[in-house]
Amino acid sequence: MKTKRSAPSPYRAMWLCALFDLPVDDAAARRAYTRFRKVLLRQGFMMLQFSVYARFCGSEQKADLICSRVRDQLPGDGEVRFLMVTDHQFGKMEVYCGKKRARTEEPPRQLLLF
Image (cartoon, rainbow, N blue to C red; front, side, top):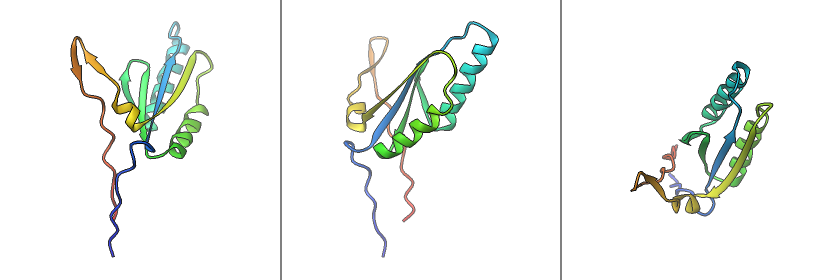
């Protein structure tokens, strides 16, 4: 018997945002910045703006797991903030390109195995 899985609730599904301000004043600092950015991309984050990345997570537990993985590889200098918002709250974000309103990012399509 096939079971149909529904999409996660927009009130339970989370977006994990990483906001950072890292120094890039010398070669070592730029390497640390690049290394941290690659960590975010490997963990599935996408760039919203320079120094603002976000990743969709199906639940708060998944967001906590991803956050702990990234936290283990923080650079030595600079400031990094993590912010979790529900998919519902993320969808209410207003995005503008110039004065024209743009759409917010859509959550990735879920892979259904059954």
